[in-house]
Image: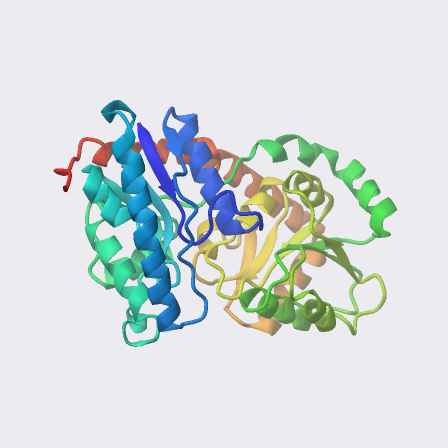
Length: 387
């Protein structure tokens, strides 16, 4: 099937790495793996972080021009080359889909959304333009794919339910982690030589962009929790970079030398070995949608310490592959880290369970099968193309 893929928040080709960009690429990879022809026909970005009504109106106007250009493009194609389905990834009030609803109706093809969020509290805020556009898109969608049970329940709470609403949990490409789990000794030696990481201490790991907002809040909460553990022997490795680096470094500035080690921004292909070298993956997940890094860490055999927030329970099995504290509970988070630091056997057992969970249930092959089932329900659907 010829599928148009569109991501209004961040294109799969966007230069800045993020979980959102990674998930978009994973969806495309899963669809390609089962024989679909996926085309990203537009990199138009509707994202607005300012809550500025006039800016949202300008984005809407720019989207109108983009839609006209795309209509002309599709009209120029032979009928056998035109799209058969439109798939938009990640729609919410800050990044509404101005293109998919209009163009799918013009083409007379099914319209599908993967990861849709609708917050009724935004209906009477400066975000009303984006909210209403998101509400319209969700209302006309022929299928909605929810990546977390939190989003699924949020839609149900607003009476958006039925056979067209599906649950497809987050997934990753597990291939890079299959062999690296066996290279722990080599990976630790490499980090020891490059960053002076101690071979005799457990290594805690966090992977996340150093951005303002929720990421910075997570790092600050983590720093507060780690201060309660200074009597224990550990090192904390941080992978990531960004505009809030100075603020993140300030949060950890009071720690003794070599307790906190910033590895900086690393290529995705290097991360598998970093995970394999470490002992526990720790991340407070402030307002986290779900976190693909949790799946990556588990695929590499690391137990998780995080918070029971939004979609995190969809990717971390509490008391099996990791431990989840109440949201924002600094004391509880520190206690969970301490439990695993003091119990090597337990963290190894959880790491093995996590690896089994991800490799058998959350790989790209499982997701491809799920996508095939979902798209099969809308494949035969057709609209009368609009003039």
